[in-house]
Length: 183
View 1 (cartoon, rainbow, N blue to C red):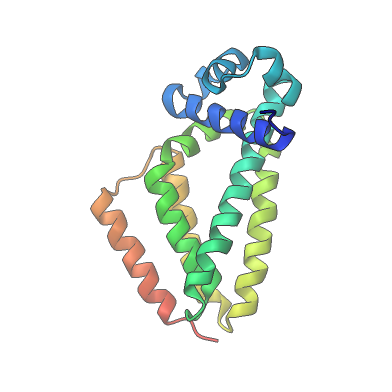
View 2 (spheres, helix red, strand yellow):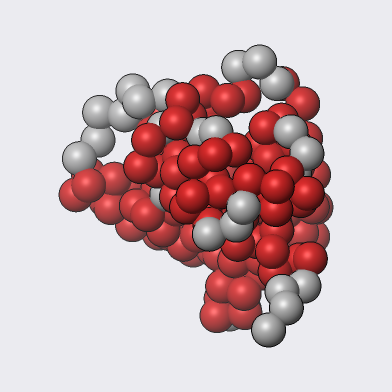
């Protein structure tokens, strides 16, 4: 059965993320991704002609995944004062638990490539507009979002001092504060 181009790219990107999880950014090579994905080196290079193209593809892939997850989880929070921010809390909590190592590795690859922020800037701009449309007191919403960003960046920079239990308490408090944000 032949793979379509988008499926092939997704398989390769997932394999690249697995390589990063296991070996860190320094372990990300075309050969390692080929081995992990089951594609030939030529197959990986056909989809991503350079390591930079692969890294760019991973960042874009992660940004799309985050936005897609927020949209999906948002449907469960339609009764919330701010469904989009409620979903962002849930998704961020999950990503910090399950994908912390990816954030740390991606940070290492970003040092030489500041343009890698662009896919996430686009996602965040769309989320910001959605949140602004859902609340009347945006300042409270931005404060909650800033806390989420702080948690994420402290994990990515390996400077978090919170235990899993303490981080869970922070997320519980953010959810409580969100209940105070009303339209």
